[in-house]
Image (cartoon, rainbow, N blue to C red; front, side, top):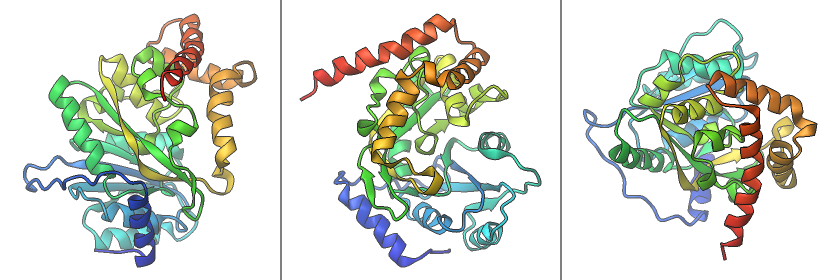
Length: 315
């Protein structure tokens, strides 16, 4: 099995410990009975960060996962790196691809081509904390015990925002960005904001079935899967802890101030100046069977007042 850069593994472990969460009791089901988790990864020119990501996957406390990778015609050494990873670890499988897909179509294509009990989406430049798969799976199993395996379910978590060198920008993406998952649990509430981050999500087979096929109107795979799960009577459940180091770098860098600006002002309040974005989002909602534009606007505005009331009640 491959192991990438001992120093990198040490940094990941130290970062996980610094978040001060109570360690989970390891899940050790037999291979025959263990739920199988498909991790879906799209790559493109990812040689700089892929080693750290792959090392963090191999460090997971829950080991019954299979990584399905599809490369989007990289021009660097990413294909060779992936081929070596697949040779060294049988849980890693590189699926052939001969066309440029982009993120949304690429992830949906992986979603369609793979079969598993549960599915997770993975970004090439992030780092997963060791208990990410286990704690989201435990929350999923609890939800399925309550609502049943045939109920579409999505579990998502908080993120720790870091820079390119894994230095912390914000310990909680939710709190810094004023995201309150408790206010975004219905189809109508989630539709106005789409704030379930794909790289933190675990979805069950029923949610996959509800989301496929995916229309061109869908903005991104994560938003579409979440909306379809809720549309079909499913549920969105949160884990209030970071499970991922959400790396911001280069053109992807938002910075601490800009993260807040992007998610509050651009996504929620400056409706007139982001009309094009909202129009595209509403087109996706219509494809999902959403109601009127007035309903859409109501839930976008209502979130502000609900959030202010919620935070006013907190110490």
